[in-house]
Length: 397
Image (cartoon, rainbow, N blue to C red):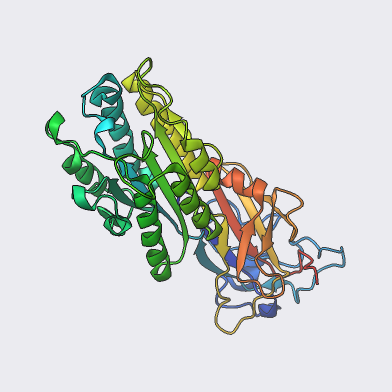
């Protein structure tokens, strides 16, 4: 199955060793034991492309165990079962700056044509893009509509668009609704620390009900303003640093002022991205609307890829069968290329590898850094997990 950029699906072929038998076969394997050998598979244990049937692996088509000790399967054929699994679901909570500096036209650095319009166009495209399928997102505008309540984290605990599977037109509608009709209608103030704190509280509540991989995406054009007390860059850094410690990374997209007018408005955002565990902020230059929209889309695409989870829940074995953790092979395919088996490496000393979350009692498969990066950057990626009839990996004690 081809993997969408943010919702990577896997097919798990469970060929459980306890079910390996002789000529009698098993009704889970189309064609019985005869399907194990012949055109249905190749010497790597993969079914022929486009065959549409379950993979059956015979004793002659699987490699020997990890130490070269030969097959532990029994008989000439192995019954197969195909289940489906998905990478851990991904949720993005987007906090979007709608303050006057994004487009009130009261000074050159607040140009709606150069900042708001191209950024909004790219944002709408992201939420409606079929490539975002498999991702779920929310959208929170700041400052809040009620000026007297904008400097409170409670204001931002409920987003303007609740967590919604993408693609969706609900986000474009919300952005259109919040876009001021006149230059005088823009909201004033940039309560960054409060929207970050409130959005993180929203994420905490959400993942108790819907476990998965969550991230905060902050889109803003500058420094916190017009809130007293704890609205400062240091306060924002403290919030995102704590969130990172709780497995919530923060991505930052900074919208720079147009050239030659109040430069440096996004210099502080690097601290936030670093504290949020995502490296450097994505800084979007303005001045040319087409170039701004292109840069913003590129930043969103990178975030979309980076947010892809690299954790695979191991599905339960078929009824009456027993999962064998040593009989697992993970494969990676790009486009129409042949599948390549990733190395099992519990220490992830090799980047292009995978490991179990807990080798003594595994419940998930985790891709190591190199394999994870490959999946995140490849919209043509496809992953496979073969549960074989023979020992193919050696689990450390």
